Length: 384
Image 1 (cartoon, rainbow, N blue to C red):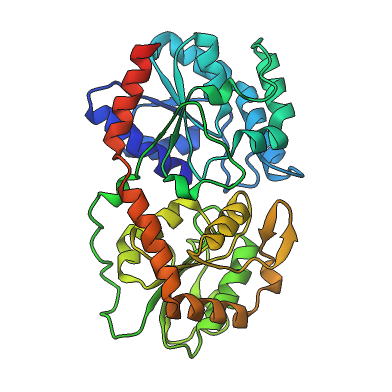
Image 2 (cartoon, helix red, strand yellow):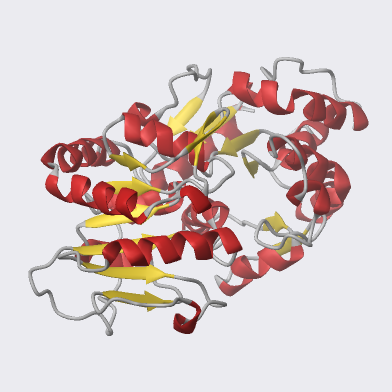
């Protein structure tokens, strides 16, 4: 869902500005854009990060999974984009920075392009180290000139939805980039959930492992430990357990803990005092917009790196407990209720965490809004 939340506001802003926009993505995922009223062009293999049976080369891959995205691009994605281009005839291609087919298709078509980071943004040097071989194979398959250091890929416009303070320390300034604040910093919060009890003076804490990992056995283990941690604590806790889990799956639920299948973070987090998440950048953005200190439960993908970085900036406590390069990660079986309890107490009692989140939120507010992204994309098209 992070990719949807990153791209949809840009699509809507471009549409509102009078541009003709279509989204090319996998069949199943594309339904999300159809539901939002956005024209959809089915492209590439139909797969999902949350469906382990949909693309074995990704889900069962050993080592960094970033290289698998290059393999996805080489499996019909580029070819489908080229076919769609004959009818849609794009003046500009904006591609998710992990969807490399958009980059290749743009170069083949000779149209300007911009990469949009859906998360923290993977630095060029790191991406090259983790997936350089697969990206070289992708470029070679379509007859593109070699780009051994990915300088051509990163030489075009790069869209960041974050201030520079959140840049990973081993990154580098890019030749052409545009930073903007996500729409959630400007949009009014949705209505308060009707089932949410009135404030009784106890801090409200929300726990969420997103939508990709929430139905996994590992997530069930984390939920069980977290529920145990809240027993007897002077807080109220809302734990999102996913649509497949039931309250009966957990042996004992304390009276101060409520289990829900799903809740919109934008509706709930404004009423909370702390957030426990898995390091997903999308949910982290909502927490920052609401000024909430966090505890991180990094399950996989880029979450260990993001959680380590945000904890180092003082935005929260990282509950990673095993060494899995390139960053500490979470072993759910080794997670202790006492660790969770201590972490929650730490962020609730520590004004420094709230101050750090507030500082970063202020940095976001200094950035231009999403509508400015469209103006920059218009300039890119005019310059080319």
